[in-house]
Length: 418
Figure 1 (cartoon, rainbow, N blue to C red):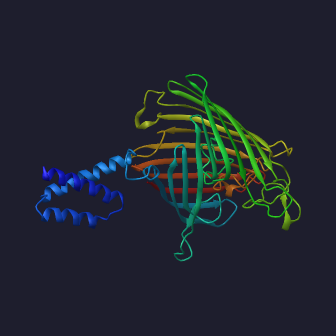
Figure 2: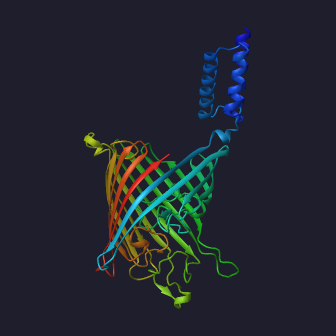
Figure 3: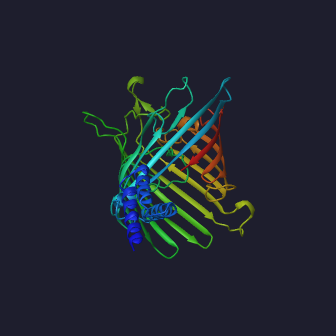
């Protein structure tokens, strides 16, 4: 009876010791004292310690631990490291460029209150909102680590989610390509997502947001910003699915303004030192994807695990020419590459007119992120082991009005996710 009581007491001490940050040395001292007094044998002490740690870990994973706040138990740490070799060459230039680069991202999510999620992340890179790369240069110079995102997300209802801060926008603005929005961009502002089942096979959704581009200081002009509304529907039946959405962008305070990080490929007005955008960029976009899952009966090597075609379209009615953009592509192979032998092949073509959209936002790897660009892109991703992938990405891009100078970009990536 005494041993049972002492064993229970020891387990309780171990639980509090582990959860309340008692170090391993203190736990070992406690067990050693009990062994020295003959209360426990060495094997019993080891068994109690291991079983207690196992139960504590299980309770934390299941968020059932009484000794830790629920928001601590809900913490999720995630991130990735990417090593990249990049080669660039323009046909009309004699010189080419090769460079090695690293990307590091680390994120933390937790739930301080019911239905409230707080997220924050750090990433490598400088101030460019379209790049998280650090180039290997300047004799081992240390790279920068900056705030990548910091947001509060509120699940107001099962069908409504709101977010504010600097956030990851993929759940709040759907697009099938990076023709308009580089995937590294995390905007400042607010957004909302609503979805509702229409039938057993169909679901409707609405996204809306207000994103702030800049702070205008003491100027009487409004701070440049963007409001958008997106409505769409998703449909699935057996092995087939489809998703279609239309988006209306409303830009405020942008006309005549010199946006940070722009590349001056949009039409400008004013003198060189104080040039601004000539046009407004209120525009309408359409996105669609049609896909299938193992529709051919499950071909070897996962060839038909996911087959899809997709596209985006944009039109800005303010200018009379070079005001449209479109992208189309296809993908096949495994739906997600996260394990050994999984793979995916993707191709897309992008045509983005000079004044179809502000040149501050498109994919920075496609002719530097400029507009007035047409481009082919092919991506092959291979799974080397769990959460480790090898990717090869090839761009062949031209300016629409200066098509004689083709740019070739080849990127080889090794990515480790955790």
